[in-house]
Image 1 (cartoon, rainbow, N blue to C red):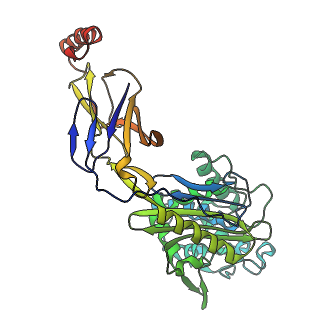
Image 2 (cartoon, one colour; image 1 turned 180 degrees about the vertical axis):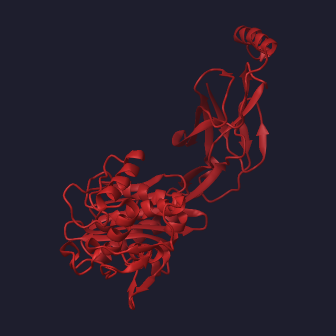
Image 3 (tube, rainbow, N blue to C red; image 1 turned 45 degrees about the vertical axis):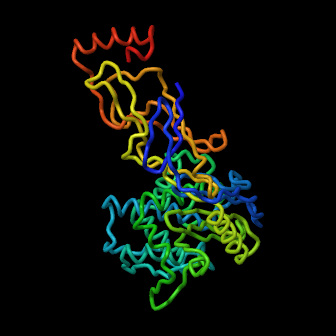
Length: 400
């Protein structure tokens, strides 16, 4: 059963199955073609809606290099959030995190840790996020999980839980390792999770510098200094095998975009191409929230329940990304899984789908959920509903 709603700002004018909404008029323009990007792979997504605005080779498996530390940071952020570790905990540095004693770390980005040093979790965490310290990554991995291998298992467990089939981590730091790979799309989704799930951890990404052992090091994400964009993260990556990678995120008002470029030829190109993508996205798109989680989208008849009607809507705010000026043309329809709703119904139970359309084409879909629990009605009310449902089937809405 499909019904259509034309979306309004806040005022709803109800007719039989159509809601007409009064929208502010805006100059409608079609977004021009996305810019060409000088990279092996790239993608640009909206953080709130998840809408992919442009992509190329987004599912090609490539070496993530230090973008791996986004996943390392996520696991650390979850450990802090759950109370498993605390920022004030002192971590004793082992030999495997010895900056100048571990041959695998030679010539890479480092905090310059020494065996036996006792360093607070907060300092090591900054060393990972701001300095991209490979030694700090090893030290915190050992502290959180007991070993690097166990920590990598935690990283990959999250990857599997999110359904990212084109990502596999082999290290906690991202140095070249056979069998380690990810994609532009997966990296964008990891960035989205980092921002959404561990905001305190993500906030470290906007810090421009960090001093440890009297050594001041600057964040390698040069877009943090951009005067054209409000960039607050996320991560650079470089190895000889990977080339130059960058996951960047920026905000403009309530809109947030995440860009990923993988495998550029030089350091400068990754910043130039990322800025190009983000600027294009903000210039020609906007993200709106036509349906809020606390506002009913429709009310439907429910049978055999302790009430006769139930409000349906969305479990989370339904963000939709559109070409600028197209909001007034946005429509939404909903389809129920079953022709009739029958009790019992649990709160947030999915009973259908909301489909957003522009010019007759679907642009986004969201689950349609029950907004309040409906319990089974009493014996006699259920008998009455059984009779009324039969009559409704024979004679239509007269017996609804």
